[in-house]
Image (cartoon, helix red, strand yellow):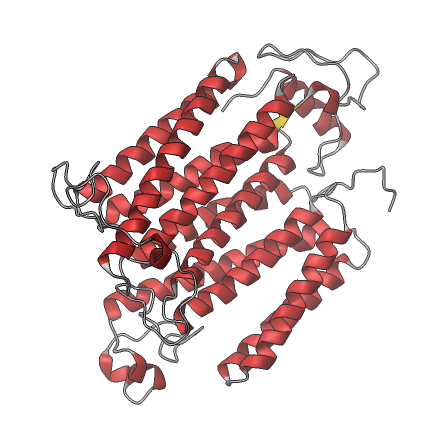
Length: 436
């Protein structure tokens, strides 16, 4: 392969990437619904549910099954867990398709993807037969193949991003299994949430790059650094939120009333007794059932206070970033969206306390984090400096761009596999600028 050429993506790659992105957001939201409705252990075996591909409808159907000895059947919860698994499985197939399309022109690309997936798939029945060590070795080997290939290749055809996303979705399956088998261990539950967000972020970036709708600004390099900081603080806050949820600390400061004693104060105090060391102990051994939480009040208060305090940091930074973006005429739409989402997240967080964590509000709070991540990663993917834009379709002077940025240079080939005439038309549309 010529290292200077840009291999064309499949003509439907960008459509598949957007579909996978929507599926990922839906799966994350449904996973929040499962977790917040205490249905995470409603199917105590994996990947089946009481030995069934779907889920049992009546208690008589699980009599004598090993899983029934672990946990009695709750039909109104079991369907939630198993449907979440179905969604995750369908998403995995979609991401596998993206990886195959992205690597199809790479030497040994298809072989690497198929080999890794066959190894992982072979490990599933072995795990169900109790051969856990061998199943783990196969899964790890498959992950290593994908990671080595991703690091070995560049990302000019999005093959690196596609392989990393596939590796994440496989690891997500393992975390989903461990969430059940390790009885909702908080570090696994939080990791499962972060893995979903990582997969979502990779797909956002990949979908926009495949669609090729750049926003060209002279200030792009500096803005990208500010956006990376924004993503970093947001992800840390998401991790703290996951830790709050996994340790059942949402109402550690009280709740269920409009009193100031539960917010902004905590148990009627500004600085109540707390135990950060115990609250942030990541590993507590195996065999403990964490459903409902195992920490004492002081530890849960420490977790809740950490989430609240860092929320102030995140809100201040993202609101400042929104104001900074709003000063650029072509960015005002995205800046407004960012600012409104931050305000909405703060409101939902407060309502979670005041209304004692109603399921609808709690799931919406998770959705707000997804939306914020979408905005930040979108801008990271779309912002380009004029010097990065190269016009190979004509020798004429390149168009000038709005938003206070005037660039010279020419556009690079669009990575979505369209013919040259289609690319020229799209480049002309992009020259007018891009707003949300």
